[in-house]
Image 1 (cartoon, rainbow, N blue to C red):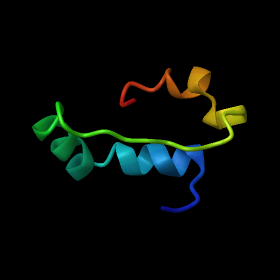
Image 2 (image 1 turned 180 degrees about the horizontal axis):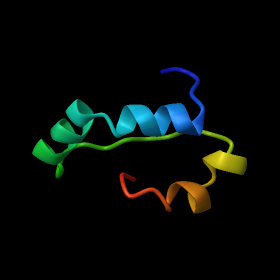
Image 3 (image 1 turned 90 degrees about the vertical axis):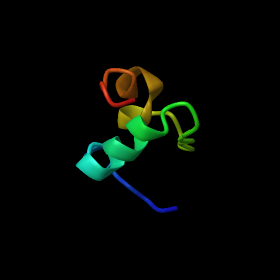
Length: 52
């Protein structure tokens, strides 16, 4: 839980260890993002990121 900018979230999500765990458990890991869905946090914006 916490407050992150999109840039901070993507930096953390793209860290090597995070990606390693996501690949190792790709069929069982889920990430739920709860946000207002406006500006940088919109699905239109986030769907452009290869890690999401």
